[in-house]
Length: 189
Image (tube, rainbow, N blue to C red; front, side):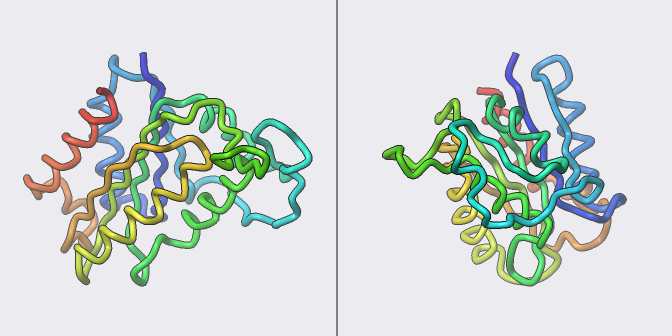
């Protein structure tokens, strides 16, 4: 059974990220071993740029927070799905902190710069934009997802749902739900 990590970067518990998280987690029941990681409910500190992780030869971090505890699951999962709003044309701060902490997987002695146990994993980003250009946000998500390659995520897929500012409104958008289903199928394939 595939191991799937769902990372929710929203602070809005009644928002679209949580609504889609519940729907996808339900779809994956019995098909995947799912871990939910809601950044807004966790202690994920910013990277200290101390390079303490570079003195080790396995992905690790000197900080003792919820991200450090999640590192083995990040390394061992088959796929990660990030659910997140777009904030000011970018990743929200809490997701940027999460991304920065994957620096703990970087190994400058490796050709691909990664000490990840597996380097064939899938990562998908499903983002929600209230306003703004969906095509621009999609490129932003695609670009940022590539940064997770250091943690072994080399296959990427992205979707941005536009006009999705009203909490829970994603469940009333058939085309965006279809995109979520396609991402779920891709993760399981």
